Length: 260
View (cartoon, helix red, strand yellow):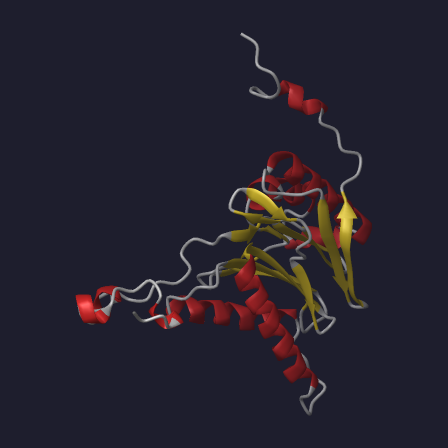
C-alpha cells in the first residue's frame, strides 16, 4: 500500500489503474471573481470651496455578516490625494499595494513632479478598464479626491468597468441613493461649491453617515473622515456617530414587536 502523503485519498493504481486527470479539465475559459465575499459599503465625498471631504465606515461584511469592524477604506496618495474604496476588500488590498509601489516610484523620479488627483484618477480608471478587458475585473468602485493642476477641488469616480464620471458630490453603494440627495441640496452644481465652507461640508457628510447607519444594514457607526486641501491631507480613522436617535423607527411599518 502506498503511504506517501501525495497518494492519500487516491485509489491504488495497481488495482484501479492510473488516475485520469483529464476529468478535472474544463473546456471553458478560466473563471475569476464573479461574486465578492468580503465587501465594504458606501463611500461618500463632497467638494467645498477649498477642497474635498470624504468618509467611509470601517466595516467589512462577510456576505451578510458584519464580520470585520476595523477595516479602513480611505487611503492617501503622496499627501495630496484621497482614494476611497467600495466593494471587494481583497481587491482593495491589491490596489493599496499597487498604489504604494506607484508612490515609491513617483518619489524617486528625478523631477519633483507627482501625480495630482486628476492624473491619479485617470491612471486608476485605465487600470480598472485594463483588468476588465482581461476579464479579471477589480470588483471596486473608487472615489478619487484632491486638487487638480490648477489647484481647484477635484472629485471623480471609477468603477469596475472603467467607467468614469465627476460631480460636486459622489457616493458609492447605498450612498448613491441615500446620501446623494442630501449632498445635492448643498452642491447641486459646480458653481455652488464656492459657497460651501469646510465646516459645512464636514457637517453634511457626518449627517449622511448617520443616515446610512440608520438605513443600510451593512454599515457601522464607526467611520473614517478625511479632508484634502492645498495644505495637505487630514485623516481621522475612528470617528463615531453622535446624537443618534431611533425615535423615527416607531413610525416604520414592521419595526419592533408586531401586534394584530
